[in-house]
Image (cartoon, rainbow, N blue to C red; front, side, top):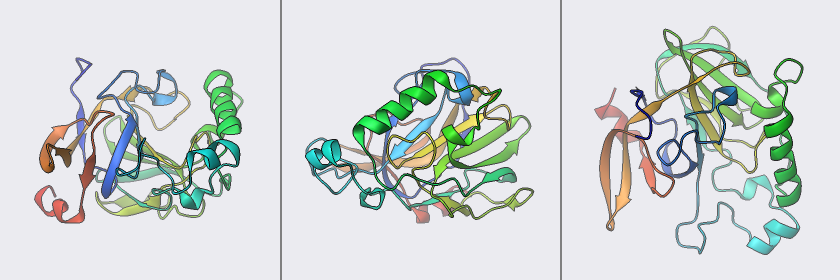
Length: 237
């Protein structure tokens, strides 16, 4: 840990293999800012571990730089997102359109614009978060899954959800540089004013020295090849 605060333990919100390029296991603030509750936030993508540079899409680097990549060519786009805790849905926003393809220049410009000029008093938080779900997981503890696929939100406000239930799908809505899942814990249900809370995952695996190693109550780094599978739920519920 790079911070003295004790992390809150939650279930990993995805299944299969993932990489976290932005994680509090490598730096805090993980996204370079404390705004919008992102101090301890994670980003998760899927990559091709066999290709040079671990690309997150099926096309070539040249295609990405010049023409962009259709979002359905990203490995993680449309993957199911799971509730990280037992809790109540306090916000569930859908219908915010995704850009149909990534484009290096425009996406970088959009990310910089939102990072430096977003005004929580007058701007729509969905311009940053896109489609999102916020769950109350405990007293003053709220989990947010952000940038979800348009039309994928499966829960409604007031709904009681059990950890491990499918609640949405990974998308590219809002201030998203490429399809990915943004996950964070906060002390408020209002993303615009919330402060981030540190969290760790109850169980997952890391690929080390040619084999998968079980990890408990820990935080992945930006270099870790991590996975979590359905059968693991039986050991943590």
